[in-house]
Length: 118
DNA sequence: CCCTTGACTATCT
DNA sequence: GAGATAGCCAAGG
Image (cartoon, rainbow, N blue to C red; front, side):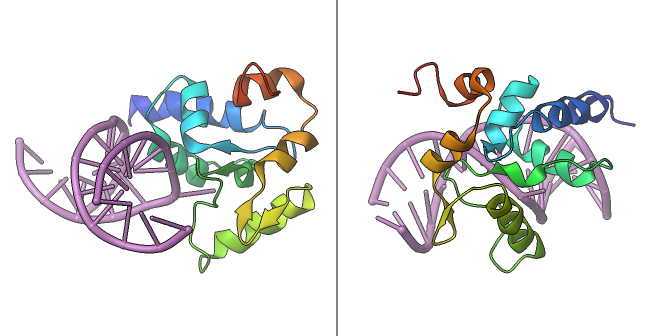
């Protein structure tokens, strides 16, 4: 079996599980935080293969759109879950400022969104 | 070993 | 803002 996946998958899951409710991360950020920069596509595979329930809906694209197409089954589910956590959508697109305000994890927030959230 | 896929990202038109 | 293009990298055929 691939040794890479054996290390990569758990690393990704660990990061995703730390995302506070109401906040979101991009695939690239998750990959980088897991210790594997430029592995955004592998993150997607890791999430899909995960056997334990992960907050996968908090992982989106860098442009604040959902990853899967509007027709995909995952799309509707992801939006519903995010809305339930207080995330505001504008025509299918996430309003980032709102998501940040809902987050109360200051340390992780700085790590993810920058040292000066001002 | 070569080619295609993919829940991606960045840049240019 | 929407398309096209290039870069990216593991997995599977």
